[in-house]
Image 1 (spheres, one colour):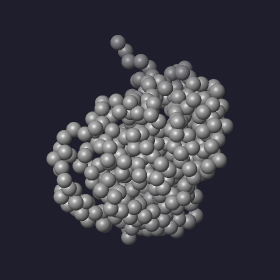
Image 2 (tube, helix red, strand yellow):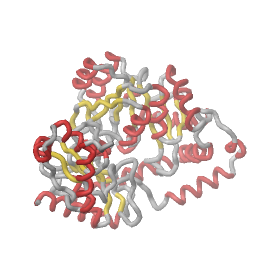
Image 3 (cartoon, rainbow, N blue to C red):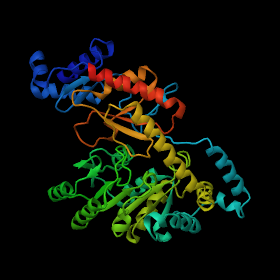
Image 4 (cartoon, rainbow, N blue to C red):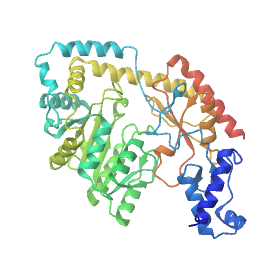
Length: 444
């Protein structure tokens, strides 16, 4: 049986791309021009381009056309990719401090001398041991007000908290409203659960309540996912008036609010959390990976009583319980003040890195929180991100474009820099290389 015409043409184009005949960055003809060139229907040309995009050979950019991808780059620079050996990693934000190892040694020694150590080797309650839930809940009083420990469940990290929320409280094909740029980890969870993400208009990571209302009136939406305090990747902090307006829409359309607070600790004076303003419908997801260490996978979910059983069932089905050794270590750090010191250190370190970033990239637009170890660089419409990513990779630096964060069909041209884990004495040199590559792209 002969191969379909569109597949034969896709194979031919793929061969030209792999051989270098069509170089990375080459702009392909429009669908209509391609159809005319090969005397095929417009629909067939569209299928050819769609097949090439599926294979990772080309990338379509709304309003600009279709371009040959650099095959040396991973298809996605997000949760599925990390810098390969020898590359400086500006993809993942991995904050750290020289004192972290000493804190770990001290914490483990303290844990080893505690009573009933054998209990940590046994199965634990699905939601965590109640005394540890109480410790975590009490530590949140200053930012969330009084938290009932019965409403707080311990998870294996913030990502696990998002996963059990999707698996335990949402169903396949449910629609979730998100920002146009959102956390790739939530996109991954949504894809696994079969959720439909709908981008809502907004300004620099602050969702527009009016557009959320319009979308809710045009289709059934089950939940809204937000990062109101230090948005990832944009770093914005949503004002209280917008939070109140979004809650009004959520109550009008009976939306579940998923509040991701992964980076909230970076903002020393935040507006009231959605959990405090709308406790009856907010799932608050937090963790300690960003404030202590990314390798210590411990987090928590705070939810209304009506949702606790669904979340517990999801924990039971995924991890059974968070590791007692890790929860004991982290709650010990909460009690002895280590967590507070670590949060202060992360804020101070982030502020210093932001200053270095803004100095090195002084003539390039930057969106970022003043204490964050990451920044967003929106590019002019005529400038493409992929050649910059490719050029920096050749120089041994791995960065991300907007693709992993975008929920819209048209992916904006932008760069995301995560520099929290780079040695500070090397950061200016690295950022100067980024600056040079961006300026070259603007001059081409």
